[in-house]
Structures are given as C-alpha cells and as structure tokens.
Amino acid sequence: MNLKTLLPGSTSPTGQQITLGVMGGGQLGRMFVQAAQAMGYFTAVLDPDPASPAGLISHYHILTAYDDEQGLAQLMQRCEAITTEFENVPAPALVTLGAHRPVAPSAACVAVAQDRIKEKAHFVQCAPVSGVFPAPYAAITTDALLAAVPADLLPGILKTARLGYDGKGQVRVSTREELAAAWDRLDKVPCVLEKLLPLRGECSVIVARGADGQAVTFPVQKNTHRDGILALTEVHEGALDAALAQRAQASAVAIAHHLHYVGVLCIEYFVVDGANGQPDLVVNEMAPRPHNSGHYTQDACDLSQFEAQVRALAGLPLPVPRQHSAAIMVNLLGDLWFEPNAARPKPSAIPVSPPWAQVLALPGTHLHLYGKLSARAGRKMGHLNITAPSVAQVRETTAQVLALLGLPALDA
Ligand code: ADP
Ligand code: MG
Image 1 (cartoon, helix red, strand yellow):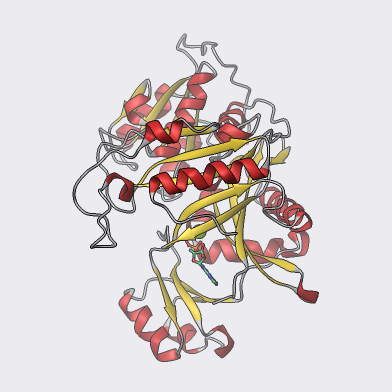
Image 2: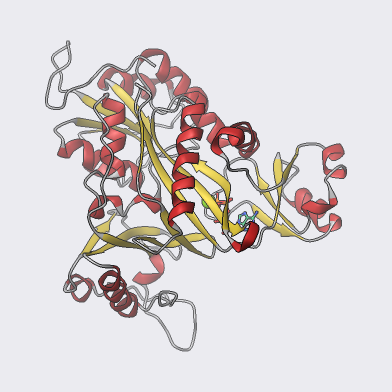
C-alpha cells in the first residue's frame, strides 16, 4: 500500500486539518480517537449509533450504516486515511474506501480475520515460518464434510466461521450426533470444528506493522477468560514462560508479514502441554485491530496500542515499545453497576456506582470508562489498568481492587 506520511497538526492540500477516520464507534474506536487527538489529528467516526463511545468524542461523526454509499463518501471526503475498530465491518465497504484512500488494515486482511476458515488456512500456511499451528480442525460447509469429520476431532468445539465473539456462536460437542444437531441449530452456516484442547492457559500478542514492512511487538499478555469474556490480562515478569513468550512474538510477526498487514493486529494463542512437560503454543485467532488484552499498553508502556495504530495509519515511525511498569488489566463489565445480592448470585436490577474513589485511592490505578450510557450484565463498560514498579506490588494492588469490586481473586 502506498501510505504517505500524514504529519500531525498539518493541513491537507485542500486546506482542511489532517483527519484520520475510523469505521466503527465502539470503545476501541474511542481510544483510537483519543490517541489521534492527543497527537493533534482531527478524527472522523462512521457509526450509526448517535451515542457510540467514539462518535461522542470525535470531531466528525457520520451517522450512517457501514455500507451506506453516502456515508462512505462523506468519510472519504473528510479523511486522509481510514482504519477500522471491528472485524465485522463489511468487506465491500473497505474495498470502496481503499479504492480512494489509504485504508489500514486492508480489506483483504480484514477478510481473512473475519472468517475462521480463511484465518485457520492462513495460520497453517504460515506454520513453517511461524513455527506454530492452529488446533486440529475441519471446515464444515456441507453435509458431506460433516460426515467426513475425523473422529479424533471429538470432543470438539463447533464455531461459526463468521461473526463469533466473546464465546458466542460456539457449541461444545462430544459425539457425531451432538455435532450434527449443533450444526443444525446453527442453521448449517459455515463452521469449523476444532478439537477441544486441554489448556494450560492463554496468551496474546499485539503486533504493529508499518507500510514499510517494519513490525514491532508489545510484551506478551497472559489472559484469563470468564464465561467466554476476557476478565484479566497480566503482563509482568513471571506471568509467562520467557521462551514461550518470545516464540509467540516471533510467530505473530511472521503471520503479520505473510499477510502484508499494515496496522495493529492481535493474535491469540493457547498454551498447551508440549514435549518433555514444556509449555507449547497453539495459534487460536486474530483480530485486525487493537485488542482488549492490549489495553495495558496505555499505562504500562511508552507506546500504547492505539498510538501504534495511529502511527501505522499515518505512516509515522514505530519504535520498539518498552514496558516500564508491571501491569494487570481488569475488565469492567456492566455487572459491576448493579447491587450484589447475597440471596442471588446474579446481580440485581438496582443500579449502583462502583466504588471508584476507593479504587483510585490505591497507587497505580488507571480508570478507563468508555462513556456508555447504560450498563448491562456482560457489557464492556471500561477497564482498569493497574501498574507498579514490581510484580509483588502490582499483584497486591490488584488484590485490593478485586476485593473492592467484589470480583474473584487472582490465582496464586
Ligand atoms: P471468540 O471469538 O469468542 O473469542 P475463541 O475461538 O477465542 O472465540 O474462543 C473463546 C474461548 O473458548 C477461548 O479463549 C478459549 O478459552 C476457549 N476455546 C476456544 N477454542 C478452544 C479449543 N479448541 N480448546 C479449548 N478451549 C478453547
Ligand atoms: Mg478469542
């Protein structure tokens, strides 16, 4: 892609302030906008929701559907370059934008990440270089392929090829009968069946790659999911085996290079038992954008994943990021906005404000709320980055935060 450098604070040939655009107005778009504005760029967001977290704070908010021709034309007219904040943006919209403006990541890269069948095929292609394979799997798109599924993929997880997130669009199956019934219930949309692996843990890597082909990675995140949603990310010495983390970074760079990816990419891995009792990696999936697990970079690194997204889009340099603090990120789901009720394990309907003043009295707590106007159970409302000069301290502060918020404690 021909991405010329867009210097912050300058004006375009038509005399307008250099403006960076983003498809999607969710929290990731909001944090992109914040990073772009901090550097002096104007921003434009395309999102149909008038109260979208990014739209609320952007210079321009184009309130149309993602595939609306007029909306896309307005976005191109406003912006010198355009990125995306969610992978389900319609690929044809990115193709249209890409014909007239630099778009990073490209429509082709987003198309791979949108579809688990293409994504896994890409991981398999990369494996000789990346050194990491996906879990054994089979694509299921026809009854014949369903019937031909090898027995050793069971028990497995049936996942829709498209539109799954936070564990949605997934069914665990143990037998062929369960598999057939599950695929039927999913209306026989294209799926992959993945072998269910015994996980030691999960980790992810944020890689940022410029149009010049230079790629940098951030320190590897150890992730804990609860009910299919990311709950905690820990990034500090000892959180992960150092050799394993290095392999994950090298693999992520190989995958980004192979795609000629421009922008910020997150790749998720499973940690499994390898030979000689050593931990091994399996590549799970990727997101063509900054990722929830990379939020710690905002307060613990000298470059955040969102500033990296801005830099990659604007054709600015991407020096190797340095982590300066031990970090733990706690996701803040809507459940925290409801009074816990001892009689019922689920939160009640009585809205409360979480105890932010007490949380913020602890050293190294950084609150990020997304400006969502209403809380719902499971809805991502914000996150809290906790930083400290030592592992012991970040864990101690996190333990206090989790107790204040009524969340499960850290693993020993
Ligand atoms: P999503 O798009 O919902 O994040 P994932 O493929 O990442 O979908 O699956 C969600 C979670 O389910 C993973 O983070 C992991 O905890 C679990 N999981 C997914 N696939 C497997 C598998 N093959 N074996 C074991 N656990 C899995
Ligand atoms: Mg996932």
